[in-house]
Length: 376
Image (cartoon, rainbow, N blue to C red):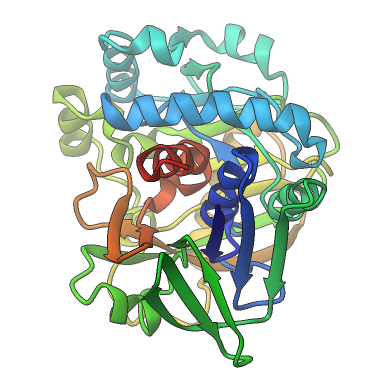
């Protein structure tokens, strides 16, 4: 079988991985010379802790298994099972963390509520102010800026994979026994199956294929520092993250929202703290959420100042200088309970999009499901 994947981000690359692993010939076409979207502009976190119970958690746990398996074969991914600590400072925040440990699926996530001393035993860099921590050892991390490159190098070694960068697909159509793709170089590529994974690019080709797509775009701001100068062994989150992940919903979260509003800047920009250390020692820190288009073309300093203050409170030391700041945009299903939107848009042509902030976490399992459903 011959498979064409349109899109060079992590979701498209994981579809290429699944097809190649099952013995098929794959051509992957990307509009940029290299992927430049949300697949690179994220934390690189394989985030189990906050996922909704049921299908979303099952998808994330399966993806976590696949990431570890693939990471063992592709060291360049930088996979590590670092776990995460969500730090709390007030009684209401502690109540949300405690409720999480009482979920029916808490054991599947590995949740444990730790004292500050126990948390520092896992992550000694946390010398600052907090009263407890929610530990999730299932969480993991990879290096987002190099993951697609490492995966493509491994795919190329199969002898059944071709990457075509710098080519924008202009048309996808059904063809006898399969489908065809025409790119902006005037070349036509044929395959048995075409999978379109163009991320937050929802206009043009995607709009023609699926005019009523139930997906929206979300913008975020993030930053990365110079090396910390010591190891940060776990990913770190603050209690504002409780507001954005469905695992923490319930009475305790409602009481938190009513009794302790977010700081004004955090509320305005729908913020949470997530932080993970890169292999070079720098810290990736974020993030904001904006849902109303048109999105700003610039980044704002106030959210970065807020995040810096929160991080320094937890670390008990000044943050290293910021090396990079950026904005990113990802595609999210309007029904946020859906893990992904998967739709057959032509005979032999499938559109897979809208995983939202779950894309890096869940992409291996999303691609596996596509492969199984299509009978690869």
